[in-house]
Length: 136
Image 1 (spheres, rainbow, N blue to C red):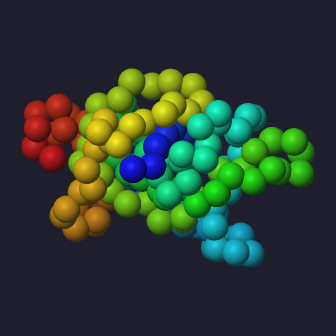
Image 2: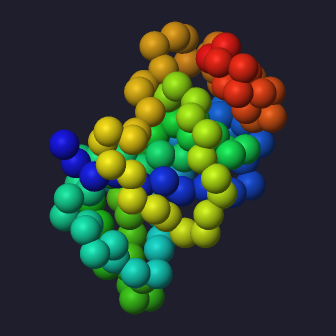
């Protein structure tokens, strides 16, 4: 199984906003892929292609986007190329961190099996509390 990574969904206050923002960035790209820049190529980048970038919102992993490729950006940075869909996952607590962190398949949350609109409508702070109470 591919290796994945986690990243803070900085500036997002809900799953819906995160999903809409990533979808818009994908629509704006010529190839329909979302590109996110990072300073350095991860050492284990080859293991991550086909894995996912798991998004952290309000100290909870709430969704994931498939990692399609890593590319050199014109400014010397690295593009993490993502599928522009955000797939909701069963919320899982995750402490905040800077940058990205590796996530092994056995530690990754499972995909959410309900309707996307059910989880997308819940504000991040409420989702965090529901997850803490094991209600989602």
